[in-house]
Amino acid sequence: MIYGLCLILFLVGFYGIVVKRNLIKIIMGLIIMEYAVHLFIVLVSYQRGGIVPILQEGQSISEFVQLAVDPLPQVLVLTAIIINFGITALVVAIAIRLYEKYGTFDINEIRRLRG
Image (cartoon, rainbow, N blue to C red; front, side, top):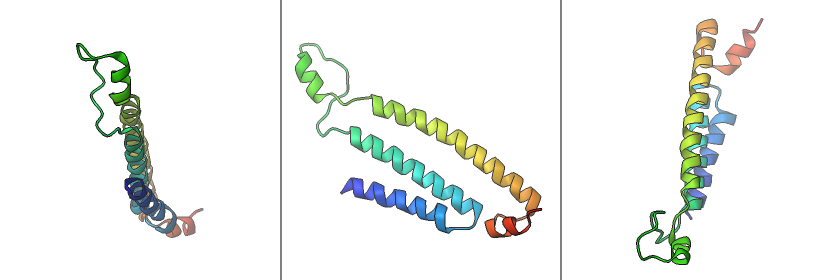
């Protein structure tokens, strides 16, 4: 069920990118899609009843391996968040430059004013 909600969130962002004609709405759709992917990766790595991946004293290795949550997907998502922040900043900077040049965020208007 929760994976379906991630898919719905991703599709909302995809809708914003494909259908909307305003650059700000397209950027918001991109951000929503990015965070839907982050949420999906974290949910895939989630383990019900999992423990913090620190070996406790007196705990067997086999028990620890079965119960510990893998921290690698969480680290990858943190790295992806930083990279996506940079991408978003670049896209916003490009949108600001387009607004300064054309005076609008509407993609159809920008295409018409090309030249």
